[in-house]
Image (cartoon, rainbow, N blue to C red; front, side, top):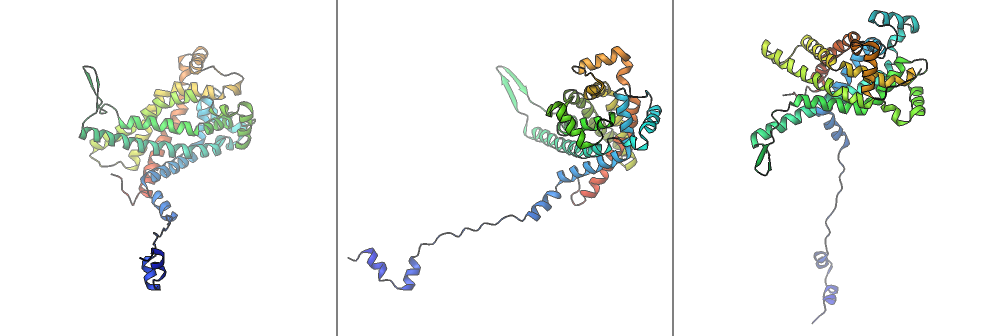
Length: 343
């Protein structure tokens, strides 16, 4: 009997081809990055993110002087009335003083509004979707012995949850820019530029200095942001039902946005006063220990009305800001999401 090796050796060229061991051909194909980027840019989330950024930038460019006056009055610097503050800023710093800190304000508001509005839309949709699925498939139940709890989400407002999440997310990411903006607005002599303000703030207190007042900010942001978005969506739906409209016109958005901002600001304003006092307290030589101490200090010196010092200037800024932001936001969504109409 011939060995296997000898048999192979006596084969011809054509026979050898049939006995060759074949290996699978591995082909690596990288995705077309241009198509990936194009798909991402066309997504609903990116469109909402960009709409929020553009709306915030346009709004702040128009309303920067009101933001300057509001900040000065809230922290107790200068005149106690709006017209007096305007005149005082112009006399001391010229017309440019009304836009003090506006560069950092623009840098701050673009990511803030983008994150805030984008987060609100995403969380609101996610919560609504979960509620609908639970209603269709039945609610999960938790049993503790003989007690059975039905975990229904019908009592939770997706809009309120989305508003709270939006405020928390934007605050955590953009709070350092808010601190820098207030320093530039309140004390432009010691903080003449953004880069110098960053360096000086870091030298004085390290990373923690950029998050001065973060606790009262989050505490104050929760009621404001929750109320703000809840009021806007509630008034929008009610108005459309009464007027039998499918959507709001631009003037309607301006009005309803202004009213929602007014309501939210009025409810949470004392917390805003305490927050501002904590954030700029070191500039005045002393800083309250916490939010309760800041509120107590204001009440002792100025009475209960002191908790609403600067409220008029705040409403003068918040109302047009809220209305214009919603108007610009919805307008940009119409432009950026034309290929994918919202339900």
